[in-house]
Amino acid sequence: MSDLYYAPEKHGLETIGEISWSEPNWDFDLTCVWKQARGKFYIASDSGCSCPSPFEDFTAVEDLEGPFTKAELRKRLMSMVNETDRYYGYSKDNLTGQVLDILSRI
Image (cartoon, rainbow, N blue to C red):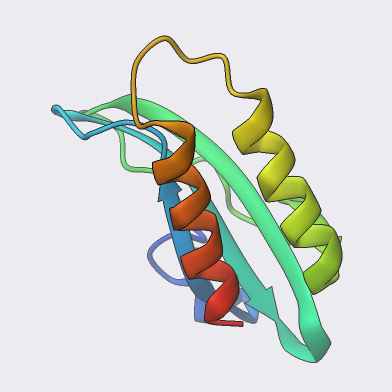
């Protein structure tokens, strides 16, 4: 079966959006949000250089964190933003904006 990032529909999921924790520079550092029927939400984070594809090791819904309700998803994503200790990347204001954008699509 194909990975969740490029073929979420094969797993009964729909991609809602992703948070980019830092500006891409031949690499990726992402948290992706997926929706499953009946308001279940899942997330996963992955990072790497330009060689691997994002989330290529995530091959089943069981590999993801969740399920979350919308309220639980908001709490989890905001917790990730507030707890970030990255010394590089986007500001917390930028990250909060990305989270709010994702939540507005739900």
